[in-house]
Structure formats: structure tokens, C-alpha cells
Length: 100
Image (tube, rainbow, N blue to C red; front, side, top):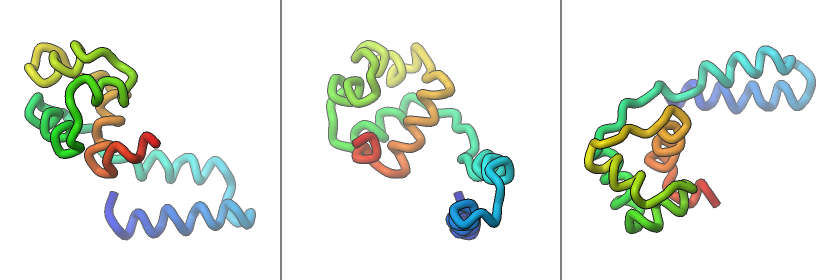
């Protein structure tokens, strides 16, 4: 998300809190602020994992999937589903700490 869009999104949240913007408008803005869908390649997934300094087994545990799935993603034998791609993008941008 661009810096300007991020600022606008924060302002919109504040407007909802004080009742100056309705929830429907906020939902539309939330959809606008979603990052574009990525097409992650095996090297991208490996980079995300190694940048976070975790093994395939630990990465899989954070994601709630099997180690074999991470291995298949990194070999290009399987592709992450839509929700998994969003989660990988979030981890790429914010780190594993985002999963708390």
C-alpha cells in the first residue's frame, strides 16, 4: 500500500470511530487498500522463509500447514492458495512477528 493510501486509510478509521463515516464506506476503502494479489515463485517463498531465519518445519508450524507443503512450494511442485499467498505477502512485508 502506498504511503498516501495508508494515511488515508488511517484517517478513514478515525472518521468511522467518531461516526463521520459509515461502515459500508469503510469496507469499500478496506477493499481498495488490499495489496495486489501476488504470484509467488518458489524462490520468493524460500526468500521469505530464510529472511525470517526459520527452517521449513518452523515456517510450516507458523502457517499451520505441513512441512511437506512448504517443501513443495519451494520446489515449485505446488502453489500456495489465495489465502496462503496473502499470508505469505503479509509475512514478507511485516515479518513472522505479525502472526504473534
